[in-house]
Length: 417
Image (cartoon, rainbow, N blue to C red; front, side, top):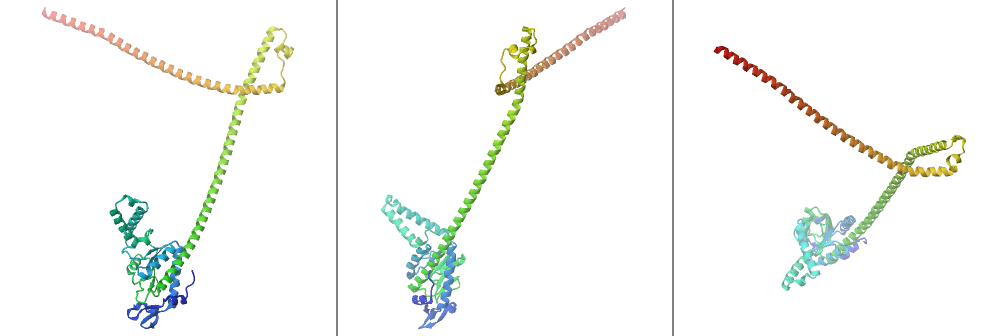
């Protein structure tokens, strides 16, 4: 974006205002004088305020925000659309729809309908309809396109407005002021500058002046967007590097953790193997020693019975009939026997344990049976004892009854005599 000079403003006719009888007194600070009944605008102030507006839009675009170009007058329509397209912003150049900002959800429904009609036209849906229906839909689509073409991709309210003629676009300015949206506008001598945030005193009717202002604003927005894109790329790169670093550190931590766990497992397995060898070797040695001692005792007894000579006096070959093996071979055989005896001993221990458990359960069952039998016999003895006691009591009662009856009969006979 090149620097704007007063010479460029003069060549574009920015300094020409309206007739003196149509002026707005609020624009007096920006008027240089009069010539042939026309006010002349002070270009020094115009240049200063123009630079401020350009800086504002550059900073706004550098933050990734959006600007809406507004210019519905005939001489501004083409320029507004061209420059807005060039800088990738939205525009309104036909008619400002009332409530476009203050009633944005309703405008969004119209935009959605326009998109539907566009997709129907592009994907060949019109071929399935009658000519009358197609004509009706096309009329609706063209009407919506006329008013919504520049804002068909808008998702939310714009962050700023650039207005070509502040007097003609009063509705747009009031809506933006109500929503506190910053306004950048070209203000002529017949306009009210009160609602404008960044005003640019100048001619808003000359085509060259409109092109100069709109083109410079588009250049400022493009410069800001370039800054935004570079910053965004740098942030994305930094975030990617940070994510890669975090992932690398996490992978290193995971690898170290896995190595540590593997070392712990290996040490645990080694300790378990060592304990198993130690616990299994001692009994095996004892068992082998006992077997050897028993074999030696058997050989000694056999030799004593067969020959009257003492066993100790005979050589080893004569007493046992077996040649003694070398020491190294004996050790290897002992180790082999120990290895063979370990699983046998474990199985024997398991069998002994199961047998003891079975014997315990059988013993407990027997005890329960004996207890039940003793309880039954005790109950039977109690019943028989009670029955005997009842039988002994009944004859005594009968005797007493007989005695009483005999006494009564004797008494009655005496009285009769």
